[in-house]
Image (cartoon, rainbow, N blue to C red; front, side, top):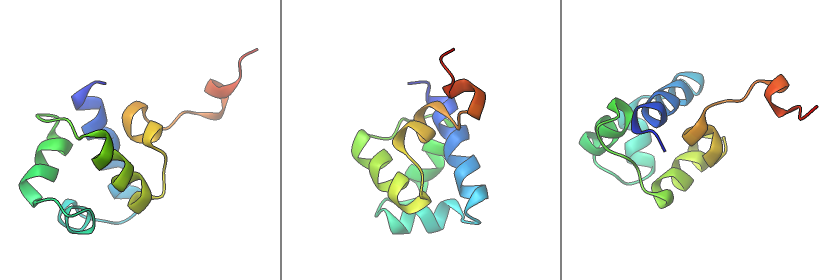
Length: 77
């Protein structure tokens, strides 16, 4: 997993959910500094943290780790 890509994906989902880093940090019980490091790409969240974020942000863990896939990216033909 690319730490910077994960951070960018978290930021994108925060934007889509009209939520701040602080709000997400509070909802998943981490300190704001930890969330800031994840979003900046200087640290990588655990699988457990990714799961909690995915529940709050209403997305999959794959969306957070790999980004939102366009519809054509799902097509195997």
